[in-house]
Image 1 (tube, protein in one colour):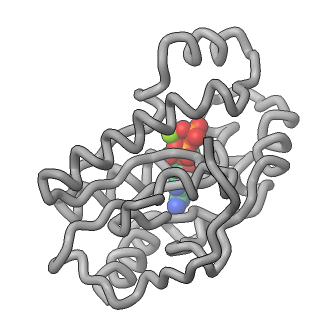
Image 2: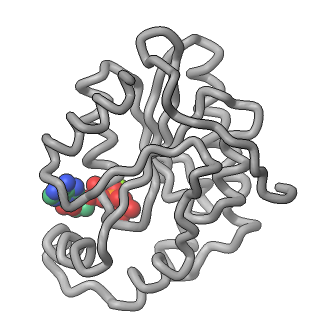
Length: 185
Ligand SMILES: Nc1ncnc2c1ncn2[C@@H]1O[C@H](COP(=O)(O)OP(=O)(O)OP(=O)(O)O)[C@@H](O)[C@H]1O
Ligand SMILES: [Mg+2]
């Protein structure tokens, strides 16, 4: 479905979330903090919030439960649902945050094509820190391969993409304040 990666420059600065609606796709590997940071930011900004994972078709959920990795063919209908949620916000002039790992550049290109309101909030961190947090979250030892495969799949957003990077080693409240300041530039 998607074509070649775009290389058009799209800086984050110059937009004001008070002037025009903005949509942030909160992205990064499993355990980087998408749900936690996304919910907190949405609360503070008064924006809509959606867990992207809730938009997976039932067939994908069944696959994930059985431990079968999703393919691109499985992901496009899901990404289409995410795009539809973003379009619903756009059409009503609302700002929103949606979580979506969006690890591959081609997924991000698809999500933002024709949607100038869309920016990516990339939660960036060391694998060891994320592994610690995932272990603490579940209370179980995490299969090391799971996080490894996420990092293999991760194509970090480039400066050609409309991206805000946040360092997940920063304490949560401080991190969210920093992001808010970036948004208000
Ligand atoms: N800045 C932070 N400082 C400390 N702990 C954090 C921070 N951000 C997230 N956490 C913790 O890290 C864990 C993982 O966060 P979270 O569940 O939000 O990640 P996620 O990216 O949504 O993961 P998944 O992709 O599996 O849904 C949670 O236990 C959360 O409380
Ligand atoms: Mg989550």
